[in-house]
Length: 117
Image (cartoon, rainbow, N blue to C red; front, side):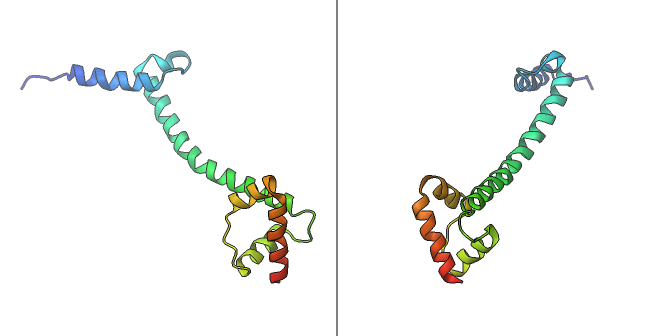
């Protein structure tokens, strides 16, 4: 049986990887093997980064809510427990935006939470 090298298919595959490695330094954007390693690593990191971004935003929202509660005599954990007992369904993102952009409404929520204890 004759040997088949698969030229056009392999060339397309190589071109695709080299295109993904555009902007990388040194041989990582020119040589297929180096580019393939770099692209594989970058894809792994981008996948992990999308998960990390969600965690980072949640930490930011919690920090903002806790900072907005410093004037009151509530801490973050008691505030969240009070929200649940008062049956107020607002997520942390909304609460943090409210604390920054609409402090009066946030204060109303805090007063409702305090009254639920």
